[in-house]
Image (cartoon, rainbow, N blue to C red):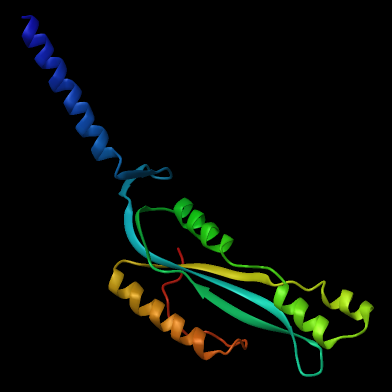
Length: 167
């Protein structure tokens, strides 16, 4: 009798462990209490920023720069993970003013104008997560995005790449 009670307890315990493993892969959506399995996605992040520079007349010109992360494989993809990844990638993008400062100090002699110009800093203008179901599709789109980026020569140009819009 003592052994059968221990066996029943072990079977009950192992059933609970199996059940908890299975429920880790699902997410409950509250409005209709519908159970949806979390998605597996391949993503990359695009960060878009503008940087000040001086044109040939020593006037400020804003140039757009685009940065694309590598492809990231994400299990159990969610909005929360999306924003955590975007924030992590954005932290790696430099917003320093060193190049512009050097350019201004080299070309401008008036200290008041120098101070006025140096109030302009690079700024993030947009960021997106591009989501794909397969690595192959993500790789093709990332390659196209990077090709387009290298063809802009730092000038503002409309990016005409068809992506799935971020969800």
